[in-house]
Length: 268
Image (tube, rainbow, N blue to C red; front, side):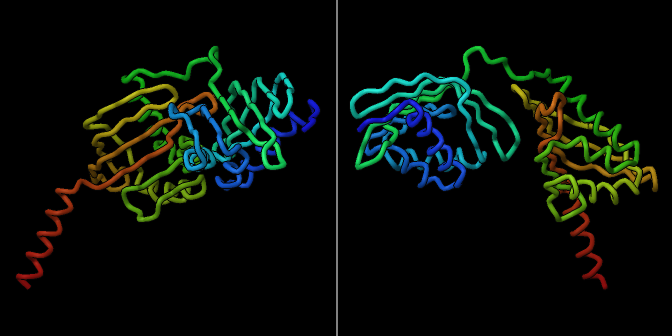
């Protein structure tokens, strides 16, 4: 089947349109009956429909949309190849990711399908942002300083675009700016200031984690409250932001209070 270079390039956008459906079956259907996919973010070659669908199911959670930046095309009898560089915008996070690609298409059952798809990271891409363990611990103080302003907007801006807050004194997970702002509007009425009692950190490229125990002094009442915490930070828009923040009461204190209440109820 004859095909022009323009038509070869358009085959990428047929695949990209399948990504836009967020349906892994529609994407997997773009591959031939005997496919090979060597994906960017998995070590495992995908060589059948089930393997393709499995990989794409996870990839589509990022809501990717691609664009070819540079590519070279070759055409032969019953096959064609497009190889170069593409860039994805991840709708779930706004991140942009460049990679090298090669597609080999074959004419099968009346249409062009992907027989071979290889996607790999850019070898000269800059490394991610790194941070030392002491620096990771210091990130808590940026958040604590934001608390000291008593401004919920300042505190909410310490969280990432897709930040999740599981707070100590609310059953409701806060998963966006408005929810986080709402929580701190109330929490800041207690004029809290925190101090880390015990901390354990881990670091990687563009992320770090700090977990342990902190204690708050409530300026409005003088009360002191201990809690367990976990922060996961990500490097976003040039600064470290809180992607995940989980704070929970100390379980032994809660159990002791429950036991005391039970004792009082029995005495009554």
